[in-house]
Image 1 (cartoon, rainbow, N blue to C red):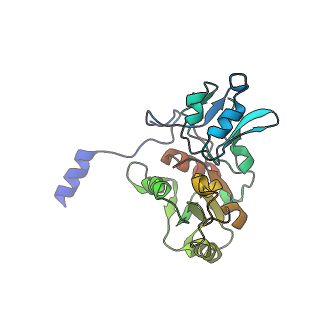
Image 2 (cartoon, rainbow, N blue to C red):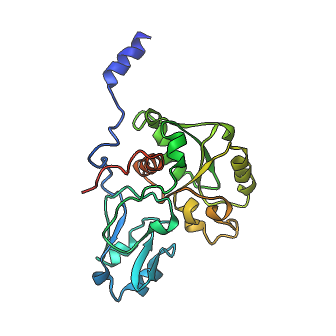
Image 3 (tube, helix red, strand yellow):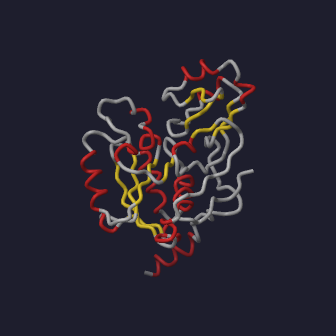
Length: 256
């Protein structure tokens, strides 16, 4: 026991200070929310659209638009056009799918329209995580939030083993044909009301597997999704900030 106490004293406090008034310490290669300069992108729309491996770039109402729900943040478009720049803005989560579309440099994280989750789970949120056919990347970045470095339990957020104890279902990966029934059974077993979180590009839109014959339906075609967290995979800070915003705990620090 004394050795364990000595080791803890030596290690010190290892939990990060997220959330703070300043952005978290993100990796140098981190690619956050993209900014689009329409003037610099003029005339390059067709080239950029054909370049995107997940068809996340299109022209909507005459403007070049990036769909973060599809984007895998490969940055190929930014390499070919200086009108697209991937920032360090990690607050990517949205409550409505249309809020994942970006065509400018202006951004304010959207707040939930439905406040019922905040009323019921503002201090405690129990999550049942379901991998509906993912590669493991989103699952790993979500699991990181349970470690000492993030300790999401200090915000009252916990992962539970049974859907019968869950307030929400967090889904990762595209909904494969083999996992469709299991996903539906998990949702049906959860007490009402229950919320659904789509974590990662595959869960939000199908990602790289959206056109696969083994993924016939998108998640929001099967269940009502309350929070979309884009990324491939989303950074732990992106996941945690999105969940906390859904709980009514603010939109996070400003990213200057």
